[in-house]
Length: 553
Image (cartoon, rainbow, N blue to C red):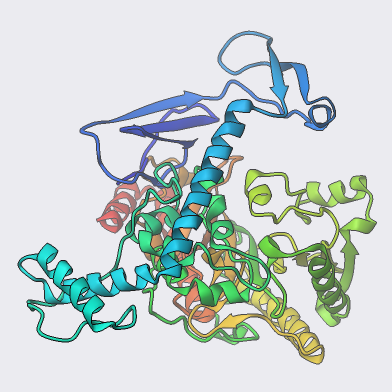
């Protein structure tokens, strides 16, 4: 079940929406066209609440780590909507919680019991026997399945067949099953997915057998399936995909699971193939106009980003300090060697003072320290700031981040709407960097089925994100904007937090189409948005609203 807020009028800043279906509750900042997902419509009613944040503050855990038990008095100045000058709270924080510890111990006991059960099944080959028998039942569909099972096992024992083999002799037959997938008992330490508002949870609720297939699988870097999905349990309401990639091997080992995840995220079938990515992006001459905004009044800036991973190294969720340092050395040297229009300087974060780093963070040229729950649970924040760095070209238009949540994020940013110039610079930087990596016997990871591989499958395929900052004040006045079906135009439209009629317009997908096709989709979507804005400015609001209604169906 999905519940989506499509319109909202006269809500104060920092409003939150809370929706409860049965025993499941989802809460998030008020955003239009962002679905709240629930396991099922198990209740006859659902409750919608709108909340407003009074204020907040952030506390350090340094004292807690030293004393294990601390009291803090905090003050929230000018709380919204209260008329008070400040709110004061006294809180107590303890490093350990006996109840939580007992709960963890119980979960560990359940996990150990599951491992013991799995060991028993493996020692006696029972799982193979039962799976083979159930598959045969689904094929034959006997009228008396219990009698069929007894006969099946008796004949197998008498014949002394190896586990997994089918007994000889006639067995009652019937029609064939169209779905012979096996769903095992979810009480055997199956993860609690009911409160996870992620695509990962949707997939595993539909295909529980995948968890049992993968839960004891470990890659050469030590990455497990539990690590793959842990962020979807710990950060269930952060609007994330709910899974990460530890290394190149995990893509192969967990391929069926990842295939279903990207099918839901990108609309690509689980057995479908992404078009072979171009190693040097696209030919800028294919872009139909130098500027998508000839007036120069609508598109304020254009940003093109590509995410890449280097073969032979674990990805950030599974990297150790040694691999992180080696990856940073390789990419840092390559970026330092860029020449011409893309030349610049590479900075190693560990060699910069915190004050110097913060200066670039404030200018939005550097990622901030990885303190969010997502970075902590995925282990991508470990060892900060060692093994990280960033590159800034002399023109300040080419930017690269190393070992944030991907090995490399390469960006080109220009004022105005000259997307062709943006792509030209990106192509030059990628070409030089690709040549350098080849000289070091290294290359970007490209999977035959999924295209470019990154830490989060949401960027698989092209690894490309084109973002345009657009000023659409007249459209912003419409309660129906942005339309819920706008992704069909190839773009996603999100209002900027600052308001003022500013919107971030990006490509709706990164996978299932070529780089050129994705950029073309964004061009067509931007053209439609500009036409609507101009129509509103001329007083043709009714026609614009009719177009939007038709788009929504």
